[in-house]
Length: 524
Ligand code: HCD
Image 1 (cartoon, rainbow, N blue to C red):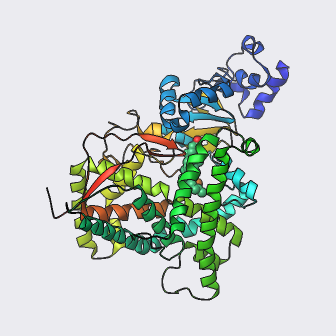
Image 2: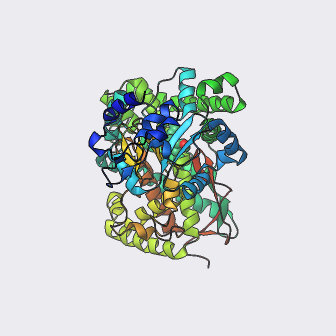
Image 3: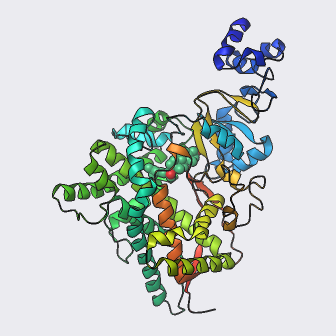
């Protein structure tokens, strides 16, 4: 038995010459599958450090009794607290730990250098954690996967076409005009609201306003048309769509750790709510898509203006219509809570940092003056605005982790990681860690402006070919929003109100944020 295991070792890609000493005693105590990894424990020096790499099974963490873990986790309120539990675990176990919750097994890392090792080895078909209830819904309703949920060659084919339309630097200029108009319209709406108040300012929880802004924005780019969500009266179907997305995220988190088939079998209320939410999302997205499809067929599309990502994909005819629809649906649903929550956090942080608001305003007015109405040019001269978005995402990332399945054996923190292991980069924990960001609690956009110390630290949109497809839309949308808002209003908040973070699949504020918007040229 032992001999056979030894023979297996070269197959793991570890040269025999790295063996330093043998410890068969250790091996005898371990069970079958653990032996393979234990044999490599301290037997093989890491090619990176010249030290012995430790076995996978030596890694710290509570990864042995998964169902008990899950129970414990649930008891701790873990479903809404994943991000804080991760910080605790990094504190307890150090910069790498193994975890198992229900069926969800992972290795978790926090060091940017380790993130670099993982991403540099991700290969041609990077695979992230597949959110089980999302694929379960599509299987249940027989719907095709979009690019978010595909893998392998099918993913790559779609992704290459989609990158050209959504992510490449050349297409940014297409997004700028529609997103700029939506940003200006939001400012107009705020002025109207202020006008309605006798105090000449507007104090509110802006969540729903920002959901509408975000949906209006992403649709202006996807469909090249306006939904009209920045008015008092909006089509209730759009509001239902917005509510369904939040419900979809909310019902996802308790189902992360349970096999989808089991979920369906028990027919829990969470699963049913989840199905209903996706049904609403798909039905509404389908309507929007059909409208554009019909306009195209009837030649009703204005040929001069940018037609939007959907029409552009349909006209190119490089992807199957069903694939286009699936991906556009994902982008429409993915573009609402993500950017709106980030902008809410941005205003919260800026309200607490009036001097940074002032710095941004002077950058913006100088940029406006020099760009003379050319918005693309304007965007090229506002580095501090861009740094602000990055800094907000450092403190308040949308995704708690970025994950990859390893495709080859790796050594991280001197531990041997087998191929096909789910490795998660804890970007939320990384962003709060003084080892990687000096004075991490401080909201300091300027930290992104010097060129050193950023290596694999800005991972809010992921990395490489599997990074967020909506990244460029989100960035331009958020930058233009901040430019127009700061150019028009002072952003204030009640002093001393600390808002925490809640995990609802994405990270969101744990209580409403009340913001006050005051016209710039008035008041104290
Ligand atoms: C959630 O442990 C926590 O852009 C899990 C690991 C994980 C995997 C994939 C992540 C997800 C987390 C958060 C939400 C993300 C998702 C991938 C895409 C999705 C980050 C971190 C998102 C919000 C787009 C959602 C599109 C959807 C509505 C079709």
